[in-house]
Image (cartoon, rainbow, N blue to C red):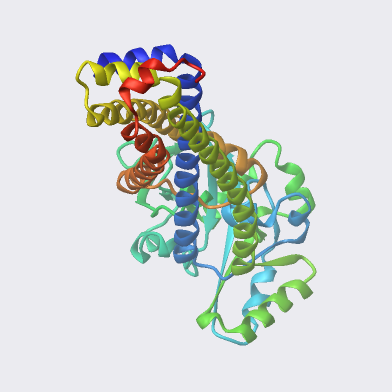
Amino acid sequence: MKHLVAHSLKMHKIQTASIIVSIALSVMLMTTFGLVYGGVQQGIETSKARGGADVMAVPTDAMQYIDETELLYTGAPAPVYMDEDIVDKIESVEGDIKVSPQFYGQTLNSGCCSTTGETRLIGIDPSTDFVVSALTSKDAISSLDEQSVIVGSAVGGVTNDSLTIRGTKYHVVATMAETGTGFDSSIVADIDVVRNISRDLEGYEHYWEKNGDPSTLISCVMIDIADDDPATLTAVKARISLSGEATPLVRSEVVDKSTAQLQSAFFLLLVSAAIMVVITLLQLFARFYSSVWDRKKELALYRAVGASKSDLRKLILLEIEVLVGAGLVCGVILGFAAQSVLLGVMQEGLAFPYMPLDVGLSIAIVAIIVVAIELVSLLSIIVPLRQIERLDPSAAMQQGDID
């Protein structure tokens, strides 16, 4: 049987190759879509649960060159500063709110530090912080001093609970829980420590000339509103806007915006995958629907030498399993490889939280895709299998190829 299948596939090289390629592309698109979509949804849900702040106040001029989704999800990958007086203005709003400033330092790399890859340096106020403490513990926050830091889950280069930043060794007191955002690639230290590191940075002089000494500056204010009270939210947004130096970013609004944009991208990807699946099914149907007519003498000969109808059905089923199996293996491998490519393309145009799915969920997604492709492929040959049952060996042997 195996030799007969191999001979059949060899005699139909073009059809065989086109079907395998079609199945592989369909599976690749579906696998890539499933992994990326699942990772983004998990990232968004985790970001909501661990984000901490309901509103983020950022310098008004930052909005001119940084998108709000970047500010929310990547920690503003650029030096943006404003006077710390904005904190007192926001705190004066009536209502149950928490207010905590942050100061963004430079983007670190292996050239100045022991970290691997680009890492953001962020200064927080341990006495008021509620964002980082939600990712670690209050004890870790309270233990921050001039020689200690907290690192994100994706920060590398930590050796023996310590790392080096611009020639100075710091003790790592904790690692933050994964969020799927820029916090995962960030190092957190006391706000005054980051200010002092930033003060003497080459190329940063014009920021201090423009905004003042870094000891009086902050990059953003994180605001938590108890019970998401609408009246307090409105008052906070108004106070930030009226300050003239800051712009409010409401987490829920930014999340809704980025989610809508992502849904559009995923819809196009899903449509592409659906089109590929339809094309593949049409090819499978055409291949096996016409196989009885095109190969009637061959199949009749098998019957004449003792093959049963069941044997012929097995032959056709084995052929489709070889085709589908080859396409599935190639498609799954390509799907995992294309995942990082698709993420890179999407993240060039839109910042969003992303957390890779664990092995169990990834396997489950692939298993669903494999089962679905197998089922629809088998359904596509129901008619050809019925044709085989009606095949008359003696009549088929007497007919010509075009009868």
